Image (cartoon, rainbow, N blue to C red; front, side):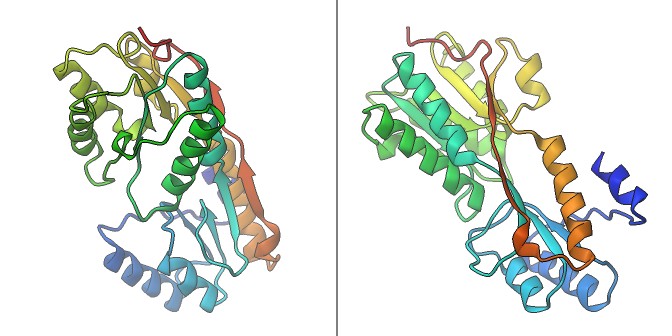
Length: 255
């Protein structure tokens, strides 16, 4: 849908994936300094993101899908990860879970910061203590393997979790780890993932999720970029979208 919007406006959308930060910055410099593109959409936003500073220094049109700690005004569309994980954590606590783990995204990226803040806020609102042993982080380059390894680590704890919050990219590793431990999702361990990927719907038991409105957000990112290219003030386009919680079969009370 967002590609169609850009085409109707007379723009072509070019998708690029870089293997690492250095190659990404090199590619960005070539496109900006060579005037190969009119604007950029950036994803996988880091807390201190050199791409953002580079584009701001050159007054180059861009929009973030996410936020960074940059203090200068810029355009962004983001999901309220803090609100989402707080909601999920308080929901699980309301079911009777007292040991809720967080398998979070990779350090250095901005979205996991909000997820952890929401998780900690949810624990506080539910009268539960924060246990650092229940927090683990998976890697973007190998989400399945790192989440599998950390799932096994979590259950070596003398007082293991009865519920896990995580980002759905890590679900295959979590399912693999639980299967190896002879633990059934939903029955033995409650699970709520962030993002309603296909595997969340087709897996049995089906996965409870925090569902971002990704299609609508994608449309907004493209539409905002076209406005910024026309010369509109980027600082007036700063949107934080709420996330829906969808309860399925993996978020039951502790057994």
